[in-house]
Length: 334
Image (tube, rainbow, N blue to C red; front, side, top):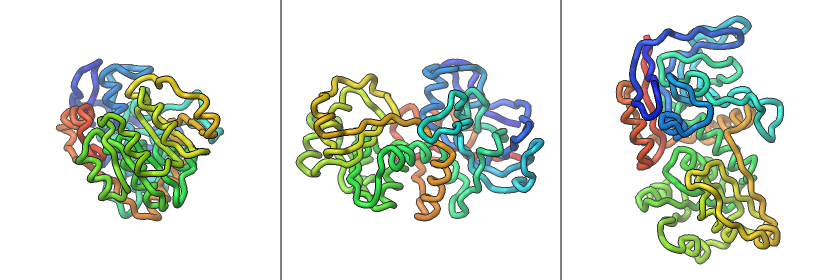
């Protein structure tokens, strides 16, 4: 099969012929139709991730057709159109993943290839209304966002929600999910055009966080937020304490801006705030996320679709951070 292989740190992905993997016990072989990029892929390529190994086939998200199954796997899956939950071996606790938890694309070879092997437990029927590209766009980002919003954040109809860094895949899917359930959503971005696009998708208001005192603009326009979801951390995190309503929840799942600066403990305990960290999500969360998309016929935002031969261009676009929506790779297999 043809795969996009990352051979070493800071090396471009190279298309090459590699052996087609074979499904083992309780595994299935998927003929990949489309795969989506995540920042995780860029960090692995740059050597900025734990447990690195090279060469590696990156890619956590995909949609495709079950080609064959291994021993003990159910043969009824053969020929079915599926999406893959990329979080393997979550474990028995809904509260957190197990020590065995893995994400497709490292340490196991991922979806930037014509075929990929995954445990049977990780596949779900592709939403019928979605294209291959749309279905590939939602697994990792949708799962991360769903858990952040609903399990950790407790978002419901009428909640006032602030989502930071709009334009990225997770943030946009959170915007769409929160709007779908009737929440009142606000956003931040460093790009005014992205804010305008977010408003067209249902956001009430957006603020450019590069403006000095940006959080004060929200304070003058909104009487606080019930839930704030962030993926950057850094020095700006302390502003969320001021923006949160009493009893509010602050949820974060990334740290691209580095360590969180000093927080005022008096404000946190007096306002009875809760601060949650979250990573990916459980099989239950994945199933609930798919149901939410299907119930509301949510159309994930796709910035651009690339052919597999141009996958390095997609990686460069992801690294630039200029996209508005998911970057998807169309993969064809014999």
